Image (tube, rainbow, N blue to C red):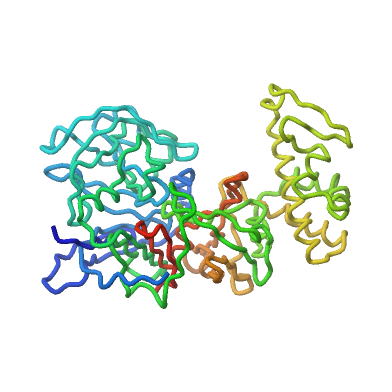
Length: 500
């Protein structure tokens, strides 16, 4: 069979027609329209998505296209088909998971199923029953159902005998009800595939239907553009990037995870990733997610309005001087909060220099406030340590930390800013492969509406992952929209180049 390069066009909002290829066409293209953004729709998209979480030359890009829609720059999704004759579904193409699932005609009791297309196995001549039950968790949300097998069409390519999940329950209303997609097509590694089901991408390679074992994303973030972007299976489209890609190795199969270097606000290092941080490239996450302490510093630098935390100010007021003294005296930052009694470590709490053993049952019953005070203490230590490196005075540093308390991200993550201040905001820079990848304020601020009704929202949301897996960054669509991204399965690498 001749190898093909399969392309997915990432569409904005509503696709109007699918153009048939001419004999000389390099790409199949889709004519698209775009709908204006507003804050309510943005919040709906955020609610729907929260909880999901070398030089190469691949030649030209001849192949097929799947039209995708872009909902609020928050969900990139497109049409696939399952069965014979084909039944169409919109799916989110998600590098942060590995299973394919769509709603089942046997989904009777989930409201979300009534708002989306459902797979009917009785109408497919290529369907094979499996029936094994399964559940897929996305953070605090999940779907459950059973495995089935059928042919899946991705663009003009038919993947034979693909195992997928027929979802019979879609939990966490309104997560799936508000989603603009029917299901999810995971592009992660098989290591995180529920039921060890072979991912669609693996079967594309096994069945020899793509030319190269890479796929690439171009996400168009231009609000005035009709074309939303492009997902290419089997290669890259050279028209959609500038210069050469910087490649970094995959460090842990499962997600597309790599080691990231320092993280800068303006020209200043935050210090959180000086020794390296794990990072994941995730097309299923709309924004950028990182440690709360750093996101709070970003919010403060850009003037974002977050939640005023009484606990945060309480820690600074009661323990700020002591934290300062312990750090200056040489106590390791990760030991400070246990020594002053705000954190429990390995069943031990330190109170005023006295070690107290905490019973397991009591540890499990630690109140939410105890956990919040511990987290807040750890952030305060991080902020003070960062300012110590810049040789700030104690009073200046504690005043600065107290201001940071007012910039803590809200629980839902959206931090509204003054649009008039965008030109005054700092650049944010990720160091990847020893090279800087800069985001300007116009690139990391999400604008909704026009004129006097324009609302600006920070593109950063808080996510705390404990060591050894953390600190962890998730580079979602805000980052992928600025940098064309290549997922090289053959060499286990990820490549980034400026998008064109």
